[in-house]
Length: 81
Image 1 (spheres, rainbow, N blue to C red):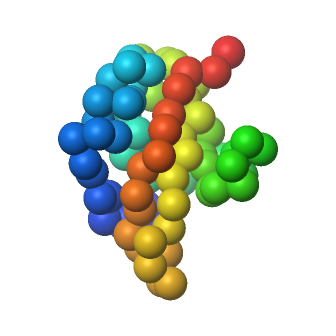
Image 2 (cartoon, helix red, strand yellow):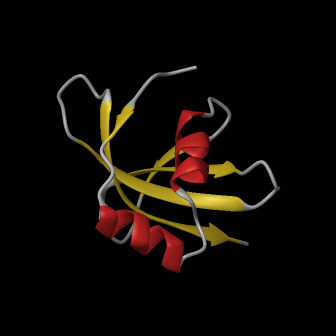
């Protein structure tokens, strides 16, 4: 399992809550090696598509904030069907 440090702000936590996604769900999807690494077509940012513990499929968008790609700044996440 990869290890990342997530940089959370109150603003992004609130934004995720508006989309019915918790920080824990976001982290679980990004950390899951079974999730698919992709790129957001809207922003060009890296993203992961994965399944939450309760079976929802999430699209999680983030930025790498270091050159070693170990630190992540979450941007958005939402359920896809």
